[in-house]
Length: 80
Image (tube, rainbow, N blue to C red; front, side, top):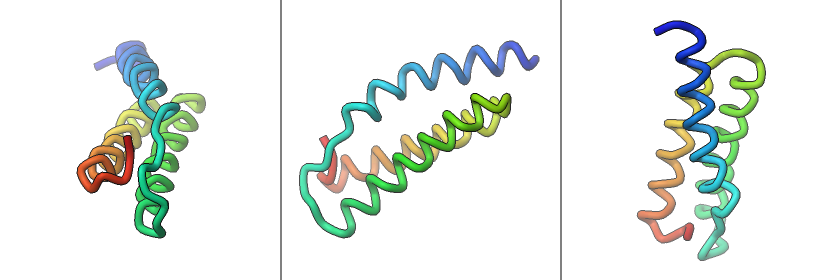
């Protein structure tokens, strides 16, 4: 996969994820739920940073981790 394709894929993933992460809210306020939120947001912010610095593979990987934390938090009923 060439750099342009990676950039397009990372951009597409980031655009979809942006809506999810901008609307992510805690349903309970516990230390554990805040940690899940912090981890999800940190990985999302890392993805944006990597993308802005031309590391498109890193951006995609960080997004996968961010979505994993978000999904786990939703499963635990920490987020809506």
